[in-house]
Length: 193
Image (cartoon, rainbow, N blue to C red; front, top):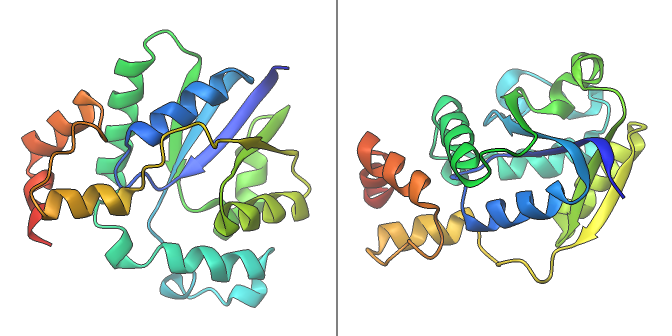
C-alpha cells in the first residue's frame, strides 16, 4: 500500500545508517516521503507552559529528548547532513526534506503547512515512538506503525560515544555524513565533548 505523503520527523544527531535503512523502508509506503528535521527546542526554553500546548503529555516526554547534552549539532548543520546524505543515498527517490520548530510546539501552524493526504509512519520500537504515535493520533492525524525489528539498531548516542572513544564509525555512517562531519570540524567537536 502506498500513501500520497508519508511524514517522518526527527532530530538526526547526526543522520546514520539506521536512519537511512528506515528511509528505505518508508519509501515502500510513500509516493512522496517528507523528512522533517526538527529544531533542538524544549518548550520551557521557549517560554511555553506544556499544559497550554495541544498534547502536554507528549511535550513533556519529547522535551527530555531535546536536552542540550543529547543534541550537540545545530539545526542548520543537521539539515545539511540530511539533505546531502539522502540525496547521495537515494538520488532519484521522491524525498522532500524540510524542517523547523518542533511540530508539537507550533501545531496550529504545522497543521496548515503539512501536505494533504498525509500519514505519519512511526516505528514500533520504544516508548518514545509510542508517545509520538499517541500524540499524532490525539491531534487527529493518520498514523501507521511499522515493524523495524529487522533494521539496524543504531542510535546517535552510540555513534557519538564511538567518536569520543576513537572507535571506527564507518559501519554506522554513510560516507557523505562522515565526510561532511570531518570536513567541517564537527567530528572533532564531538570527539572532544
